[in-house]
Amino acid sequence: MAAFLSLVIFLILLIVVGVVAARFSRDTEEDYWLADRSFGKYFIGFSAGASSASSFIMIGAVGVGYTLGVTALLLPLGALLGDIIFWSIYPDKINRFARTRGANTVPEMLSMTAADNDRRLIRKAAALITFPMISLYAGAQMLAAGKTMNTVMDIELKWGILLSAVVVIGYCARGGLRASIITQFVQAMIMLATSAGALILATVIAGGPEQVMKSLYSIDPTLLQFSGKTPVLFLVIMVVGFAAATLGLDLALPYLLVRMMATRSPGEARQAGWIYITFVQGNWMAMTLFGIILRTIIPDIPNPHFFK
Image 1 (tube, rainbow, N blue to C red):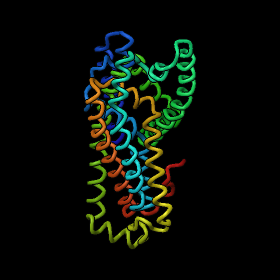
Image 2: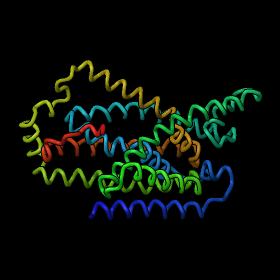
Image 3: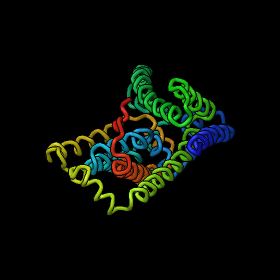
Image 4: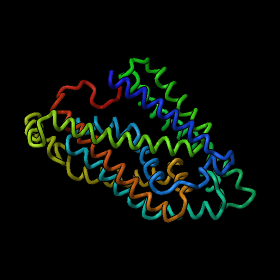
């Protein structure tokens, strides 16, 4: 019952925040697409982190930690390397370029250096590529939300997905990026409280850190080894590959690039990166550790990979 009420309150809170944010919009193109470039490093960093952390970290990282043990901690380490490279080099340049050229969207920014005759073609091509790719990404988030509603509220999966989509589309269509940033900032605060609370509670239930170590060793000693049953060379390749993949994603994800464009200044765009990195790493590590500890509390979960 507590979980049901928490989810209902969370959904209502998102709707209220979206409506309030929409009331502050100025009905201009720049305000809709870039929130009038009025947000600083904290809102940008936390909202971008909430978008990136999303269901993979809050759900998927638990399953990876449960299955692989401490080896799963290498995944956020790889992502950390990629994020540091991106946030050290690109955000201030993206913000400055968008400001100088007057670009409000990613397709528009990509077309700015092209000849006048080619700009419209580049914008259309970028939009045609972006729409289906982001639709798949958003679909995964809606699926995670639908699963949550199905588990907590006993709502049929398809209706849970539909309800999630209606809520998101509703506040984005009315409030634009401003509503998205504010709702995701609130979401980030809830995610921080959830991940920290879940980790602390699981540790207490499991009997403390020392007992967790003993229990994991009795279940499977490889759960406490970074190499475990996996060759070290493969793990190195995995970390490097994850770093490269993270850098590629950071450069390609429109919602992240838009937040760089929407920050108040190039300096704050770069500073937002350390807030983003701290938030993502903190949540990822916490939920992975939660999954590892959960192995000692519920040792026989039938579907730890969350594939179904």
